[in-house]
Image 1 (tube, rainbow, N blue to C red):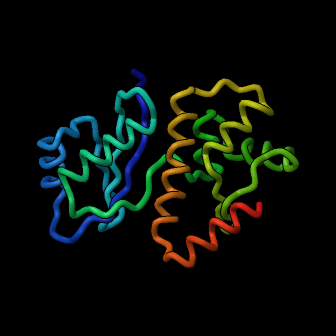
Image 2: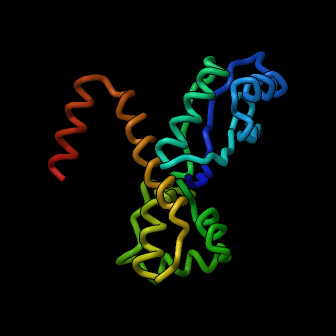
Length: 176
């Protein structure tokens, strides 16, 4: 068994208090979930869960939360999307040093999935880059959970498409 750290983010309906959420999570077997609220109507659950794979850890947490709090709506599973500051924090770099690494390695550093005021990358791609191009050792459970959460979030988005959009997405993916 391996311990996996990940986060489930939910939209919370009005009227559901943090105390109610904590009680129902505990009663539902989610005593390994650390709830956090910041934005009104949102809930982040940080998990440290033992399982034979990242997929089993995340899926069991999703199932447990779904049984305890069926009225919640899943927003995302992480870690997946990260910015410069999050990556710098993982490797204990300054934000400035991380930006320098990105700028000095533009040919090999993963392309962001979003550029704007703050660029975002898939954590799995960034971790793989650090292993391959920087010779860094990265915790295997972090790599596993980042790879799974990336695929999970893509699949969740795919399920939100109508049939025509799904067919179009498959054709685009197959075309390269």
